[in-house]
Image: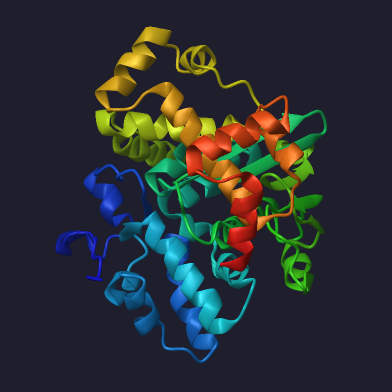
Length: 360
């Protein structure tokens, strides 16, 4: 496979905001290296030369010199699959997230550092991560005295979703400790992956109870933490960063369908997601939503089916969540209806898919 090279221009290479400063929109399905840049040093710690593995994933190792370079999200998944196989480390993604800091999130991380409160920092992450990552989506909800920060992969057929979500929650905890104080811990961590033989690395990093075989990757913490002030936040710098990010999020017709995918992935398992509901959220008429999606060559129903299939695929491959619970999470009143839909999507039953995934 030919190495994929997608980098900033020479004039931007030494700028900490590099491609962000250029104002270019990140294409759907791509991700800034940022956190991913930590893969190379971790492989070296295992005594493994990272360059051959990076090349085998179809990437140019030179990309890893600059966290602002971008790669296909699918290549990240394949790279992590290779890393787990070579190191025989089932929590390799966790190690990647552990090494990353709030600054690994680029300009969005800097905005978090200068947000007024922790809640503002997390809302900045949720609202703006798309300029760094067009393969995964975070969300933040509160339920009384509990806050839930979730992270989901929405790009179809991504490999190593479990590794990606492990690492994403690990760096999210590091970012929260950067704005709350190093002593901060979540109350509980939920992971959509089979429990590993040794769960101690997870408990050691999160410093909290960790539950596996969950439907969505989630950090659970006290909602009162959202009101904490961020020490050292500079309101003037915050305004500059917000303006810069606003300039980077200019509307592009080609990204509209991807925005709908992100929205649905964040809401599918916990909210109503009819076309009317989504149109209301976007403050547009249902017909306007359909017209804009048609301009992207897709329909709303096809996108919802795509997202349901991707969620189902991830839960079948990476967890032991029962079929009835997966069906209910996706809005099916009966497991039989889910089975029929899954057969239409894949040509196989959910049970056969899960067995094949385990054997593969």
